[in-house]
Image 1 (cartoon, rainbow over the protein chains, first blue to last red):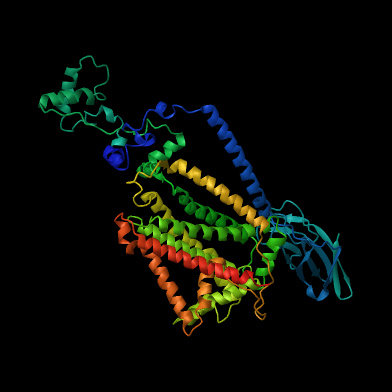
Image 2: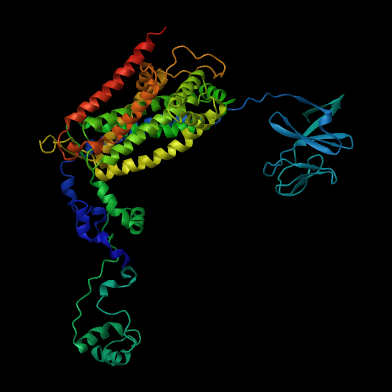
Length: 180
Length: 430
């Protein structure tokens, strides 16, 4: 008898005011006939006012939301585009790879047996940064097991594209990274 | 149980024949309905029951079962009735809310200021959330991120100015709301706790103002916080409180972190709780009319709160919004220079206007122990002010209480005069 509680009891309803509201009245009669409430309403005027209020409201809403949306969009970070990046050669010892920020990309420079290569370190699958595994002479992404050759070509894994190639050369004590 | 019965309207029959009866009932059924085409095993219940009743000679009145769907006459959308069937228990509450009415009389104008305070509070939440997207609450980065918002983020200047102005307007509205309800004696029985919760909301709002003031981390903010957190030192145990507030012996990066966490976590949470109580009470207890207005026939009628008064409130909000944008664009708050713990305080430094009365009193009480006296006076004054509904017995009996009107005028005069004195003194400075 869960639903036979107070909500249908006219006594409780009237204790809350004069009879129940029509919406929830159900079997209990409540409210006045609709026609009486709408007598003397000028529907033309009401419709016009609805449009005016709605229109003005839309203008206010849009002009309020516009600055907010513009604000939320983060201002672009100014990255200075360079053709070459010079880093100390001591940072990339033999058998290791090290990642550098190069313009908008992250580049992994690998020193394997004295020869240098550079490819984008950003795995083309979901953006993790790859590791250089010197024993296998390949890049390995631990996130989902993507494997790449030294020149960035795909060996196996879920990645759709090879790693972008860069070039790296030694000049004195420095490594110079540049676009391929 | 009733709603699970398949055909509750056909209620005079028991759903199942009694296990003991079938032997007797079946032949009876056949006898009573000889033309029945249905297989006997399926049909027994219907014809059997009246026959059984007739046999036993006991009259069973028809059971008045409840309507399985009491909402079938509702004029509601499918979604509306979906919720109604599940949450019918809150329908009386909604029906009750629908009946809330706001009296119309010559002081009705003052009913709008509480809603305006709420409106500006909502703006504070929204703009505050937006400012948080770029603000960094650390000693090293606070001012830089503040400059970044003001200078580089599109419309960042506007949102910061709106946040600063809306804070001031909100506190202004709360003061107007408080004094108007005071002079209308709206705090009287049964609305004592509305007054108390409202006063707590005002104190929390002042806390918002104080903690938010430091966040730009400019010179003005730094020294205002320095002075503000220094005040409790004269009270016994105050030094400890000061250290807690500052997160160290001096105002510094730790103070910024504390003020920030209070401003964006603790205070909003507390305000939400108290505000929920305050607004629930407004809906439950309704709007108070001044003492004697009903008897004197001064009430010209009632507006339904939903939707009439709310729509009127909406007009007030639109006016408030326009004023807010005008002020934010035309009278921007200063950016200032980065706070420096080793720089001299700037000339003409003073707190925000809503602390001017206290500020002036502290400056006036120059005698020995004057500061402590000022703090004690303000504390006692605040407590008395909060407990006014319990002190003013006259009003609670619906009798006029002119003593409290005078008391209110004195408090208001004190605040206004002292505020004006600060204004006059500082605007005379070069």
